[in-house]
Image 1 (spheres, rainbow, N blue to C red):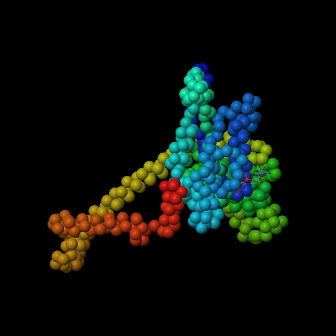
Image 2: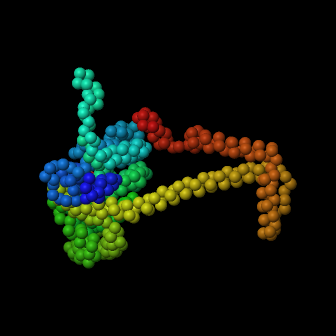
Image 3: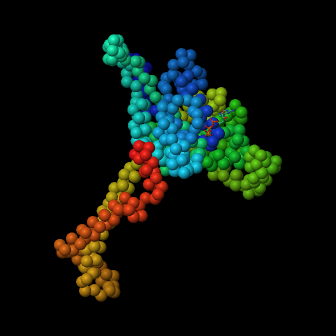
Length: 439
Ligand SMILES: Nc1nc2c(ncn2[C@@H]2O[C@H](COP(=O)(O)OP(=O)(O)OP(=O)(O)O)[C@@H](O)[C@H]2O)c(=O)[nH]1
């Protein structure tokens, strides 16, 4: 093997990057996903817009669909939430509306996240070196035996994830957090926030979208690319300019104010209000810092324009993830472990205190001591109490033990739901898990 191939091998062994597509309903997530898939199949170097002549992809993407309510996906997902959870059945069984149905389906799916991650790890492992062609040992009479080894599978370099259009259901739910954090603790993960450019041309809709993106960035704590989609219908240069030049945004604001066009397409909300203008002005100043953390690209999922630039952004964010986010994730993980240990210690301390209380309560029958009048008297009294605890007789210790035992029994009853246990919702969830054989 020539030395010039060595760096390529290092790149081959790099873990795949997970691209999570998030965006409002109708922003073009599914069309964008479809474009990502076709771009990766036709471009050995996805950062280059020139398609391959040989039509041989350098790597095939691994696709996850996390939208349980989607009717039709124009690509074939490798893992589809709809295969594990029947959204309509969930709605019926739990008597839920569409958003509740999506949320519960995501909850059910997130209980299986460990299996999903294990499968992803298995499927995205670097491809083994090309095998030495083996002769076929199949018995052609019986059809049994070992067939000749096929060529090594293409290595997966991208994991593409489609999410429901109900952003808040995904981003702000516990299951969304579980799914994203499990993914990010295994693979470099990048959020692609898809924006409907033709619907973002007014300063107020633009600002609403930016605030939404900002909240997602701070909630997920993952690197983000702003994808201004549908550039075939509306060029995205105005948005890029507003994000880099504060005065350009102010000019647009002034123009809208003078023309009475606040509130976006056909909206009468806030038209010409001075309060709106000054709010948007201040917001754009506040968001200046947020803009610095983003990559911004204009694409057309319909025509494929801008996809090379998008993948350059992905590479940039992947490196940022490794450099800035991964250490932070590791730190948070360690903190959680520390918290767990500290909580265990707290529990132990509480248990010890409980034992002491039990012993002291036993000694309540002893003659009552006079109330301490000075601090030193109080300290002396505490010491005496502690000694009393230490010197508890066998009978007293037995009493303490039975106190703890009864507390354990009480806690066990609670956890079984005999008394003040989980809510009816928890029960129906557990019942559903049993019925659907998911538990
Ligand atoms: N002109 C144009 N239309 C687009 C583009 N991308 C998507 N669309 C259209 O936008 C509409 C919504 O696209 P979808 O891909 O279904 O959007 P989505 O975000 O997945 O929608 P939900 O599944 O409801 O969340 C469809 O009519 C698409 O044809 C684009 O790049 N250019």
